[in-house]
Structure formats: structure tokens, C-alpha cells
Length: 161
Image (cartoon, rainbow, N blue to C red; front, side, top):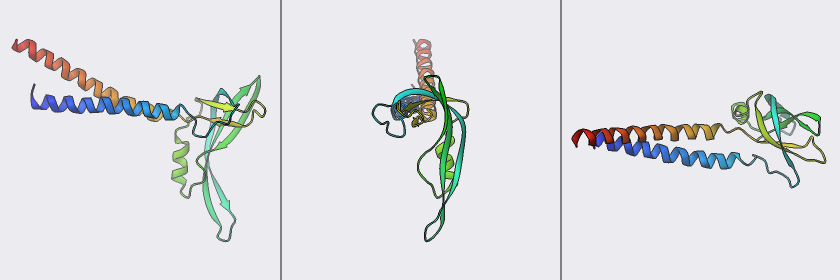
């Protein structure tokens, strides 16, 4: 095997192992909601209706603004439909940071969410799996590289043998 092939094989192996490893880590993180689920909450599916960043003015000695990432979503419980807004990540000094918090939510897509059966308008929604998909793609690139190196090595052995 040529030195170039060894380097390509090593890089591919690292991409494959690293990508799949990161995908597993991100999947574990996103399989749990960003907010803790109180005991007794039940799982359902929520559809994102709208997302926004709220500009909130705080009146103190020195008035200031914070930006609150917010997502509106719809879901139904026992035939009754709910449409509510939730805020995420607390307040941010910078609007761009707040927009990053809601960027993962896609209007019209479904996400897992949990509601309080006693007060169904109390809900916690799950974030998207965008990081899992990106890490999985890195692993896929590594796998393609490994297959390429294996086929190339096999063909070289057949040619020389």
C-alpha cells in the first residue's frame, strides 16, 4: 500500500469513528429534552407553528434589553387542541445568540414534547436532531473513504498476485 493510501485510510478511519461517535453522543443528548421533564408528564408530538426572538425591556436602575428565543407549537390532548408559546435558553444580551437557540426548530415539523396531564397547556418541547445528522454525515464520508481504500487495496493485490 502506498503512503498516500495509508494516510487516506487513517483520515477515513478517524472521520468514520469520530463522526459515528459524535452522532451517538448528540443522539443521546437530543433524546432527552433541553428542559427537565417533571414527573408525571406524558409524551406526545408537537408541530412548530412559528418561532421568534422577543425583545424584552427590563426596567431596573439601568434599563436594558434582553432577547428571548420563543417557539409557538401546536399539539392535542384527548381531542383538545393547544397552541402555545415557550421560551428557551433564558435571556440573551445579543439577538444573534437568541436566534441561534431557535434556529434548530423548523416551522411545520414535528418534535417530541411532554405535557402535564392535569394542566395540558404546560409543555416541554424537544429540540431537533440537526447535530446528529451532521455528525452522521461525517461518519458516512469516513465510511466511503474506508470502502475506497479497501477496494483499491484489494485491486492492487489482485493485480500483483
